[in-house]
Image (cartoon, rainbow, N blue to C red; front, side, top):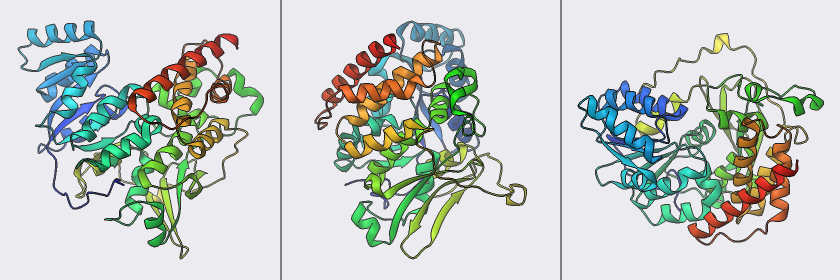
Length: 406
């Protein structure tokens, strides 16, 4: 089984980069890191529909290709680049994403497209043996078995960008083929993912029904996109991360715990059999894990502020209240169920969060919609990408119907 350190003998700085999801928060942070290091070149930048920002990025970084998923946006970008005598070639649609993710001149692919839409291009990068920096957790949540099988059959290197999984990766024994048995043989007792608890950690439960999208997107520590911010507020992001950790590190959910850590200074920990706990610490800035993975196994400057422990004060840790955070409970249950349960969980969550952000549903309806969708769909073994897509679509249709009844 392949894992983030399975191909640890393959070293050296990758220089030609495709950035999938360039206009999102991870994409923008990645370009900030790249701008500090001229040895990196941008081969391709992609976005869904944000023409203005992708145009600005293309003019600054001069990629060979730019991809807009939406056809009208691609045409608009092509015209704008032509007016500025840019040599960047514009591609459109899902096929354009696959082309730049698998191009033979690309060394590294940053997979930062949010949601299920990011799965095909991330999988293509793995199948074509790229160094894949995985910020799209849904790729593993939806199709973890298939994704890891593809990794095992390629020469790809998979490195986690999520701050929690990146922290675990840094704290595990290096050059280790990560399976539960191998980790236990090296003395690993458990993986501990930390969570800030989001903006509603101390709110009265009866007030959560009235939460607005603006309140849910106001994360106390991190600057993130709207969907991810809502996932953090509901702690679904941590449920998804439990599933992701199981695939990344070859363990079952019984070896993965979650602790609330409001300061977001300790990004995650690994506990060993002798009682030692190794923790990765740093400022709450995504440029740190991005720089770590870009240069791995070397280190480069990220541009993030250095952590001054003398100014941090006390660090606190609490067990999560699964009554307050039912989305975390649902994520853990889906990890235990396996098969297509995580696919259904993710699909229903995306639909429920979208409805909440549009004002069509309440914050507390998010876990209710997810739980009802899971209850009404049969959990099956995930046997192919086509099957995953079908289950994903069926779960979305059901979740939308359930939202209409709420």
